[in-house]
Image 1: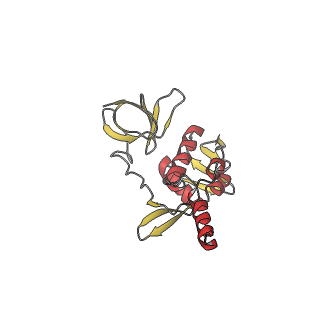
Image 2: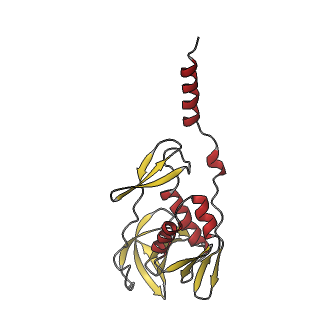
Length: 203
C-alpha cells in the first residue's frame, strides 16, 4: 500500500515542475504611443507596469536610459522628451520583459527582483531558478557627444525600421544599419549624419 504522505509529496512535486500553461496567458499590453508636441507619450504605462509586476520607477529608469532622454511618470502615462516611434518603445518593453521578468529556466513571468549587495538577481517563484539580471552595456565612445562621419563603433541593434533595417540608439542619435537583426551587436562606420539620424555601413 502506498504511503499517503509519499503520494501527496509526489503530487505536490509534480505540480511544481510541470508546465501549468500560465505562460500562454502572460501577454504584455500593446504599447499605446503618440507624439504630443516635442514629447512622446506612452499612454498605458501603468497598465504595462502592472502586467510586468515591477516598480514603475524601475521600468521608467530603464526606458529613459535606453532612449537616452529625460522624462516623467504622469498619472497612468509616461512622457519622454523627444520623438520616438511605437516600434522603438515596444522593442524596449520587450527587452525589459526578457531581461527583468521572464525566467530563463521555465519561461514563466512568476519572478521577482532580489538585490544581493550590488548584484540584482531574478528569482523565479515557479521553478526556483535564479540568475543575475543582464547588465545594460556601456554606451559606445562618442555616445554622449556628437557623432562624426567616419567614426567607428560597436552598436546594439534594438529593433527593425519600417524598411527592415536594424536600428540602434547611441545617445540622442538613431542609427540605421542595413542587414542586421534585433539582438545583434555589430561594428559600424558612420557614413552620414543628418540631425539626430545616422546612416552606417557594417565593417
